[in-house]
Length: 217
Ligand code: AP5
Image (tube, rainbow, N blue to C red; front, top):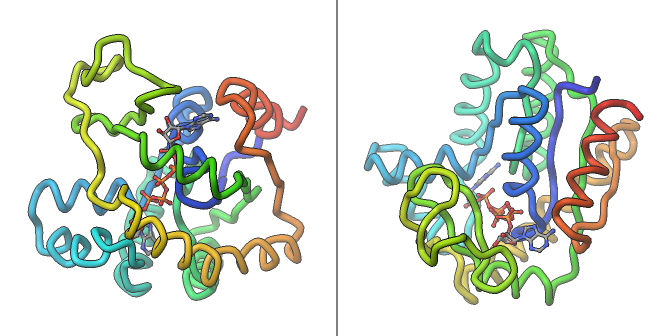
């Protein structure tokens, strides 16, 4: 089984949706830098205050900060049985740092999963997304509705719209994706680690495809 995994893709491609199901199915540690920053913002820590100023307008948090929190998290003992990185790396500097960290802690990456999706669908998804305030589960007002409006199916928490899920911030996020993150696909292709998937197919079908890859089927 593949156990040290990177999940990549543009904002709204479905990384978070798939990540939550995959980590639960395969007992992996979910490391989402976006979730880590949002948690710090919720708790109003100094990291959260700093991150909010970047995230709310759609900009990337500086590399040295992001690399630092991932390095600390990956070194924890619970990652030894496998981890799924969601939203990291996003720049060449982050990818180079991750390579070094992987060597230091003897936890190299087994596979890089890229979920792609066209821009119109990304805009539709992001503008209709609602997220659980407690557990972070993602929903969509038209296509992935909760059973009770405004309430999370999983934990009963209230659903809200992320501050960076607006037209202006999304344009900035897509720009960073095209200029800084997309070049990483070539970086990982050269290393023979990249696997591409179509994120516009149904969430269940995509989950089955990703599961087969992880199981080596
Ligand atoms: P992050 O939280 O990583 O956000 P993102 O990459 O922009 O991705 P999203 O969470 O918006 O989308 P997703 O692909 O997870 O889609 P989802 O599954 O929710 O980062 C946020 C910010 O933090 C960044 O902008 C940056 O500021 C900062 N940051 C984070 N990491 C950083 C790093 N490494 N370096 C620097 N800064 C960093 O799905 C979207 C919607 O579509 C949902 O409504 C869902 O229900 C629906 N949906 C999902 N799949 C399907 C499907 N197959 N069919 C139909 N609908 C679907």
